[in-house]
Image (cartoon, rainbow, N blue to C red):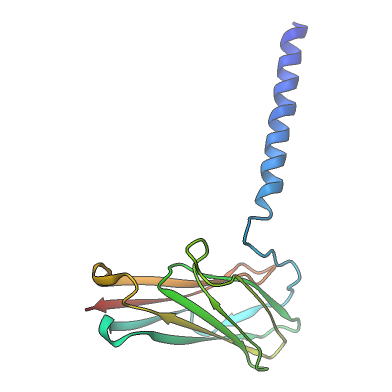
Length: 167
């Protein structure tokens, strides 16, 4: 009976150690900036946009999303990423400070940390740039893409667009 007890105790200790190690490592993923210093909140006037039909031959299209800090505390923008290499994002605070370009992580996308602060009453402009020719001739048809921003205590903010890509 003691041998069985020791095996169970050892299994619990090892299992607990593995769970603890996994939890610790999930807190800071490589390439991610953890943003725990943001206490304000951003309001999104428009979270999605439809470009309609876009032509590969005509080149890049872009849309600006306007977000406002309607709280009494600053909002710190941490990591910014896009959901596809065909999309690039640029950020600008109404005070004039800019950051970007941002892209899809792991696929040669541009830097991920914005390091911008949106003060109470300020606006943040998120310009999403879409390259309809990025996927070549196979890239025709309906697409949906997004820009994801870490804003600290609040859930990440996602703005998205869709388009119907034609040759």
